[in-house]
Length: 244
Image 1 (tube, rainbow, N blue to C red):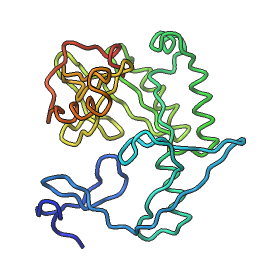
Image 2: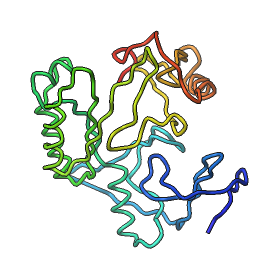
Image 3: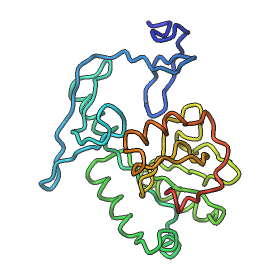
Image 4: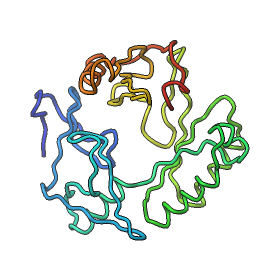
């Protein structure tokens, strides 16, 4: 059993790190995660209707590269169990659905079809891409009826529903995610890349670093360097402009 961090020497605590599903030894000071599992990699080739399922990496190494669903085995599991777990963890569908009302959905998405989303949910379940996660952003216009309809819809299909209250960028106010992780500044390791090529280190930060000006690596490194421990407010941007 590990007791101290090999990076800084502080005591370790056992908890589930952000983005994980199992308890790990985590440094109480520097937050480094210490894994204790076999160094055997297992995975699978998932195919459906003549197509092979690939995953696009969201973390280093090789962020953005395409790969098969695979990863390290955990303690006390067979290779088959590990392959199935990795496939489920890395390919589980994550779907945004803020309402079940077709008219309001079309307004929110500027012309989107809710039937296509429902068809996608059914296809995800039929393909075994579980757990299927439904993200619902709560806005001042969201009604109690819409919330209850989503709870019943997701409960009947065993979908994992998460309510994410819309941030107030101008006042720098946000809330913890109901039904999942999120809303913890000290554990945040995310940045926003806008459609016009700007890295934003924090949604509550007005700093932006353009890829066209600094290059993709330079812009990324500058955003990492200036990521605040906790942002304050963003009076320059709206969600429509920065995405989300």
